[in-house]
Length: 479
Image 1 (tube, rainbow, N blue to C red):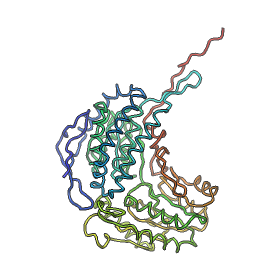
Image 2: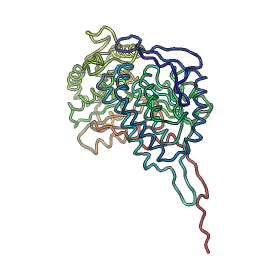
Image 3: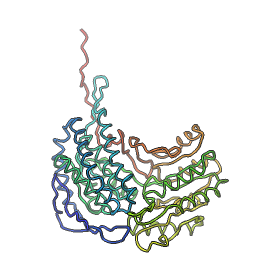
Image 4: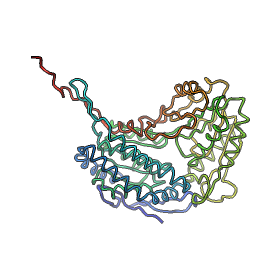
């Protein structure tokens, strides 16, 4: 049984202002596996005060000092790698191998990428007699999700530290263990007191207090579109910057000349990964109408090969994070059935051999129309919807006909055609032919998928203000 009953504020572990505990449920067993304290607005006040005080000195550190700090954090993180991976498996049900090779390893990539960007980042630029300076924005509030619990913290904290900001972090109450270990990493790395502060608790309490706090200069949230809207609403009165990485319903366009079997299999695997709990999962697969039957056969084979079970065993995927999420997925699967989509495989309930745990059957629907609920709403589970198109223009129109615009995939053999399609998609990131992940490429969405960008040098800009200093370089007087 894990217990994290204190918050990390001003370089110390301190008890909550008002004692209140929350249970953390292991989604594989449905049993309580730990407890955390639930914070309040008073705790946020203390953390903000510490961050404001620390900003005075930390904002004046130089590039070399911040690089050295990030390198110390990397060293301490690597020491706790196994602990963090095990925590991720326990708190959100990620299979052990996935927790190690994807969830936990991603943070090392983010830290290294942040260090490399910082080495050459241009904080100042002269234009004639004017200097344009990029300066730390101030105290940052960070609200992070449960689906990539430590990686999403790291991809906010690293650029903020690199920019010279201080911060108050609220991790998800669904997956707080890895976040608490991250706070221990920060402490062990010698992050100056008050630069990094972390409070556990509920979104409507701690998250709302962070978003509305007049002492916080910007807030970054990764989560559902509903949560992002609430954060923006709470932040509006203080006119602080808000960056949001929110929901998605990503299209996966498989062109007629693609390696069809490879594309369909890869598309199914991408949705099943992390039990479907990734905002950029390509959940809408678009195939030429004449190839729908073939897509059904291939997708069924791939989904049926996706094993579900104990995350500490050899299963491909584990459970989804909690009962609420499981019930939402069941509701949406039922909606797909009721609205006339073809249920290819999977469906309602747990896999037959599993009698407890929030496990979902790997599910594929075919002959889906874009106005069906399963094509419009983010399911956030291992559910693929296959839609058909007659022309490439129709495929693009279907892809763009969504309230979301986070990511997309395009598969084909003719690069000019693929690039033309990619240029027409109203999304923040397009993957071509299953391209490898690029941890320096900006990530974020159009439309209801949010605003702002994370990762790489674009991620740095979210934590910086721009100042123009006129007459910084005096004009030379002619003799």
